[in-house]
Structure formats: C-alpha cells, structure tokens
Length: 197
Image (cartoon, rainbow, N blue to C red):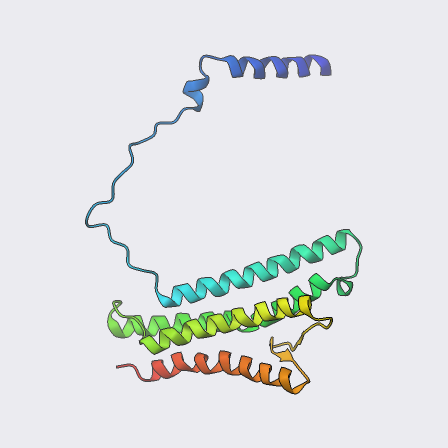
C-alpha cells in the first residue's frame, strides 16, 4: 500500500512538471512598470527617525547576537561565563541601557516640534547635532566594549546602567569622556524644547 502511494506521488509530480498547464498555473500577469511623475516627491528622513532607527538597529543586533551565542552555548553545554564572546556581548548589551529612553526622548521632542510648527518644522540645527551625538556616543561605547577584549587580556566590566567600571586614571578619564559624550548632548534637545519659539 505504501509503495503504491509513493509511486502515485512520484508519477503525479512528474506529470505536473510535464503538464501543458504548467505555464498557465505558474505565470503571473506583470503590469508595466509605473514611472514616477513630477508630483511624486519624497522628503528626506528626519533626524529623529535616523537616530531612532540607528539605536533600534544597534539594540536588536546586540541582543540577537547575545541570544544566539547563549543558545549555541546551551546546546554545547558550556557555561555562559566561560565564553569570551558571550561576556563581550553581555557587556555590549549593558551599554544599550539608555537606548530606549533616548528614543522616547527623541520622539517626544519631535512631537513637540511638529505641534509648534503645524507639522512642517524641524528641530533647531544644534539639537539635531545633539541627537546625532547621543546616538553615536552610544554606538561608540558599544563598539569600544566589544573591541577592547580583543586587544587586551582583561574584560571591560559595566554597571547595570551600562557605564564602564574603570579603575586606573587613564580608564577613569575614558569613563568621564564617555559620560560627557552621552549626557551633555542628551541635554541639548531638552534645552531646545525649553527654548521653542
């Protein structure tokens, strides 16, 4: 019985490949390509959306890589703390602590600007630079946390807030620069919001 079913399946699939109805079944009607008219204009993506998309991409790439790494380690029955890649990705994930809050701040600011300008304005230029500065500061911290273990024998430790734990004077200077690169530009959109015209 099973042999007959297999033979029937093979024969019907072979007939289907040689069927004269195959082209009609698999073909689709392709409409001619439309051309863009002169009235079809797209405005460039706003600074807010650029920054939010960048932070979202960073967030999901880091957390997806961490999840995949932990899953592979679980299948191999290896402890998470024994893997250098997992440690580096865990510390990089901790640097993404501020990303959701920064995105919400950017969205709130953009909504306020749109409210004040009737949906036609953009934030002040210095605020746009500050948005990019915050986004790139978070990216730089994440990349720094991933790259340092490659060139040194020690891991970079991070606090729960994603800030680096550093003990030597050079490392402390690096931490302070990182702090200023994130928090000073983050204050600029708030300053710009208070100075709306």
